[in-house]
Length: 277
Image 1 (cartoon, rainbow, N blue to C red):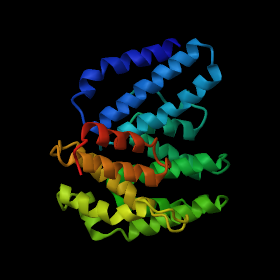
Image 2: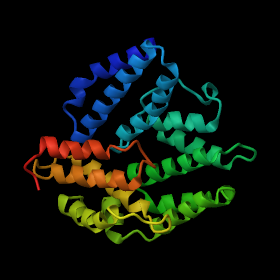
Image 3: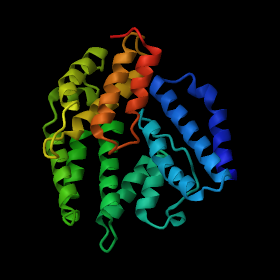
């Protein structure tokens, strides 16, 4: 309880900084505070099992916020591999605290070290994190395709995941030129670019598709574009559309890569921008 109280205090102290930030960042902060306060109440009413389940979700909430920009600023120092029971746990901690280089190193160790136990869920999570890092944070789709392809021999025991990764690799290698130029910075991102890409993907976002028809990569990339543009203080009339497209991305990714804020973004559209199109 004391540690959760301390976390709540730290987040309350951060509120002035949060209020100066983007709408999605504020949404992340609101959800985190509500989550911590609920956890604290559960602990104080001795509902330890339910509180533990809440605590397990915290890293994904952190990640949802941290991947909204391309910052590599480490949030904690002093923790080493010796503090964790597995390479995967240390990679997850490093990922959640923006130590992305270390996260990549230990996801790699987890996936490739002979004799390491791999659960299906942890294997899929590690690969999803790597996809997010290479594409949304580092903006290196070609590198992502090459690196993810190299993991295929190590995941043969999970056929479903292997097929999924093969689809990612294919999509990354054939990513339309416009995406590549925007990711590399060769072309400056503007609202019209996002609108064009979002309208291409919007019909698919509202369709139910088979796993082989799903295309996660474009939505991960678009999500990164929208966050980047929102961090540039867009015009007020652009914001509700950006939030709507962000919600579509989260909905389409179906909670796979992040804690989804789709409902929060849609609510923000209706409450803060009631007269928008």
